[in-house]
Structure formats: C-alpha cells, structure tokens
Image (cartoon, rainbow, N blue to C red; front, top):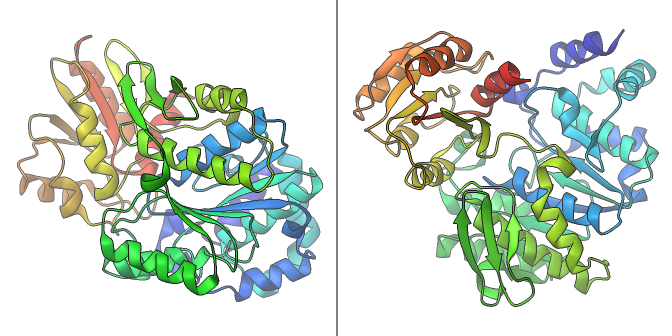
Length: 428
C-alpha cells in the first residue's frame, strides 16, 4: 500500500472516534497494554509529559513543545485530531512523521495488531510511541484523547502531568457534572508525580484534584494560585504577558483564552526546571513568540486572510465558545459574518446560547459522519435568535460569506474542529 491507501486502511479498519463517533470509542486500557507489550514499551525509552483537560490541550502542548525545542531538547509531540494531514498528530521538533514510517508500520505489524482489534486512536498512539523511540527524542509531550483515567495514553509514566481545565463535554462518556468529568481527567495523576492544574472555576473540581493528588502522594500546583504577579494584555499581534520571571513575554497565539493557557505553560515550565530540565529564559521567549512556525499549530484564532479579515478557531463546546464570543468584542468590523457548524453529539443549546445575535450566520456542516445536519442546526439556532442561510458544505458557506462581506467586515469560521479542517483545506 502507498501512504494514501495506508491511511484509508487505518480509517476503515480502525474507525476514528472524531469522525464517526460512538462506534469507534473503546473504553479501557487492555488494547493499549497489549499493543505496548508487542512493541516492547517504547515510551519507556524517553521522558514524557502527559496533558489532559477539556479545552486548551492543543495550545498547551504546542507551546510547551516549542519552548523545550528552543531549549535544545529533541521533542516528540502527539496530539489529536488532525486538521488536514494525518501526520499532524505525530511530530518531532515540529516535523511531521514521514509517510514511509506510517506505511512501514502498518505493513510490518498488521498481522500482530489486527487480532487485538485496536481503535484508530490506540494504534496511532503506539505508532507515535515507536516513532519517538526511533527518533531518539529526549522528551515526548502526550495529549490525551478523551478523558484521562481510561484514555489509551494513560499507560505512560510521565515526569509531569498537566490538566488544563474542566468543562462539560463528552458527557455521555465522562459524566454529566464537572466533578465527574474532573474525576476522569484526574485519572492521569500518577504516584509521586507532580501535576499542574491550569484553570479551576468550581470548588468541587478543585477538591477532586486535591483528593486524587493526596491519594497518589503527587505534588499538586494550581497555576491560578502560584503564578506571582501574573498579568496579560491582548494586542493585535497576540498577548503580552508579565510575571516575576518573565517581563513583556509575547505569546503569538491571539485567542482570548490563550492568556490562561500561557499561565498553565509557564507554571509547567517552572515545575520542569525544579526537576532538572534546563530551560533558559530565551527559550521561553522564543518558543512563545514563534510557536506556530516551530510546531505547525493551526486553527487557534488563526487569521486566514485580511480585507475582509477571516479567522477560524477549533473551539467547539460551551467552555470554549464563551471565550470566542468574548473575542468578537475585541475585533473592529462593520458586520460580523459567522460560518458555523457542529457535530451531532455536542450540547448545541449551550453553545448556541452563547453566540452573538447581531451576526449574520452561514449555517453548514462538516464533511464527516458525525456532522450535525445543517437543517437541524439552523432550526435549533432560530430558538436563540440566530438568523442565517443554510449551505451543504463549508466551501459553499464560506464562498457566500465572502461574496457578501466588505473589506471592513469580519468572517469567523468555527463550531467544530472539522468545520475548521474543511476551511483550512481550501487555503492549503
């Protein structure tokens, strides 16, 4: 098989949860442990950092990878989902995994892994672990897929655990309260392993983390409480951050939520330095200022063009959308146009209730099986006073928005990672 055929094999034999939903979800670690044993536990050959949370995992992992890269480390990065190319999930120092490695991995090992019947995520995770060993990385930053306690990645023994935040998402798997979801995410906390908690908006959530950390004798740090004299100011070029250790630190990522992600990463850097990592100040400044170039991060309040300004963002649940809605207030425009679509297992009501009513909507749907039908979305949006036309594809919706927008207008594309993926493919 060539590369394209190999990726299609992975999709068809081991369906990807993000694209097809519940039928691809496999709970538990049995498959991951069996795969890991077959490959002789490759993740034990390098240091790891484990990152969980409802939102902000991608920004946090990429920022941390950029800083460690600039500090001189060879850094593996495993994230999901990808937006355009499957290989975005597996990178070393910002470079995607080679197509040849993907092909050879499947051809050389399919007889061993097919009887195990792993999920798409389980198999690609093990591919990443093996690739990082082959490339002799110094440290790999591993992002969880869904949850934490029973997530496939929870077989590693990391130097540091990071939990970015807790919001209501994937409630059918993780629980219907913030405390229940926090308990699942807290499952990545390991014995005597430091853990950084990025954001806590609920005291019940805080108590869940404290209880789990105490049980595991794991030192726990809450970024909101330990970051001395932290302040942030958003500008047209991103955030300017200040604390006692870093003055006028520029964060290239411009989304409203990035101030919180940055504080989480700076706290994590402090913990890594305490345990012996060498991270000079210049590496922090350079990593934050050049994270997109260094890591290939896409879809985080990303500007696709100007006149009219077009921005996309992968935020897809109420916890993320509230920050996106706030971001609109920071933009200057005559008319706001929103190209919007969702997947069918999200809480549409909580999301739609946060969106501005003074925008013109171009409702659409992503090109995946999990797509929420555009007719259903538009009908539901009416209940919240959101008005607009319906389009069967992102391409058609964006084309219509651009035809109607003047140079001083603003077009936002979002609602789902897969809406953004469809848009980015048009700009590739």
